[in-house]
Length: 277
Image (tube, rainbow, N blue to C red; front, side, top):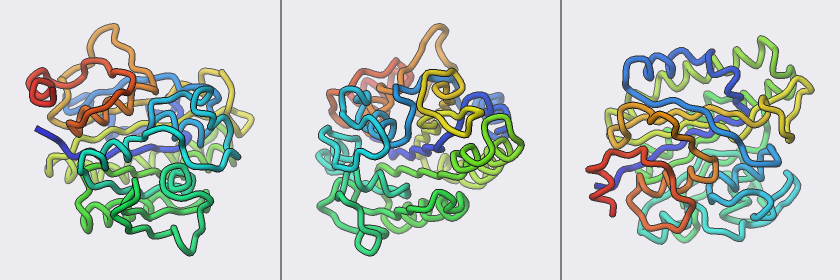
């Protein structure tokens, strides 16, 4: 069995404010999902961690060590792996994702809407303003899902990160933006699950009270992870910790495709893993 996968990468969502996300918490409380936290790789900056999550390669190895490193990735991302296996890919994401895996430099007139079967991200809606509304971005993702039926879809909203940079970690604006994201996901997640998608929701990094991130503080590094779908085990195993570098392998395992990425913990049902391998 090979599942379709949706990854929601909520930019800048610190684990410290995950308590604001009552719908996701309610799903876990009802036994319909898993929740844990993980540590972001270093430096805890956006572009380096997009690369880390999507390739399984930490920034000090990938060479994407700060946000101004503007070039194509030199490693296979989940998009490359999926394409090599004949899967269809899509992303509604910040333009740095396009710049890492499709074309660099990114040109808005050319790359804002991407539909090219030969690219790693075949179908894309990419934005460049940090205050692009999360509601619009999620609908961009839904449009890609309904129009192109991707096997792997990345949805990457920036609103929480933008609020953090304006108001800081300990602000009502930051917490309320996380609450708004929870409500937006409450409208979409039931449909995704009803249609058999496996859904991974996480963040690249957290936020501090200096209105920034990038360092080693727990509030900058500790981010939430939620897993939803019938391929996952029913409860988080005691003592099991997942690394950010293992998320790419988890995505690939869900898709049922071959990879050489750092192996993820045993979070999938045994019957599913037998079919995959």
